[in-house]
Image (spheres, rainbow, N blue to C red):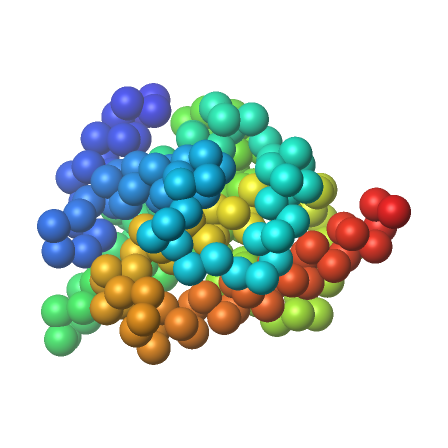
Length: 190
């Protein structure tokens, strides 16, 4: 399998009504570019975004971020299930996606980013501290943070818009984790 075949499998897998897994990845990348290019009029921006210049100076290059965002869910076609109510689920998709991307490309950096894609959405403050101190580089941290912010905006309409309770809950988590990450790097880079 190569990247083209991987993209095709993602294009043939529905993530949500009217959006395939690959279309979702492209949408996340487009939202990421809007953030990076300061086209943020339609965004709800977290308080930590005041550090955007520092954050932007500590991101991976555009090619890395493009491949990461577009292929971050490449394992979803394999793990996709539909429950008895007709709801779609993708159990353990981040780890499966990491493994598949590595098998196809041999790219450890992007594979790791893909494997960590859900960490900011699901981890506790203590778990994030461990990532910051022992696992992630500054570029890992800020790339994952901005992509997470782009992703919740990309998905906002699925939640009922940026004023919905669901979006607000996801935003609050990114606000907390971003504050934690910025505080950590502001203290360690003085």
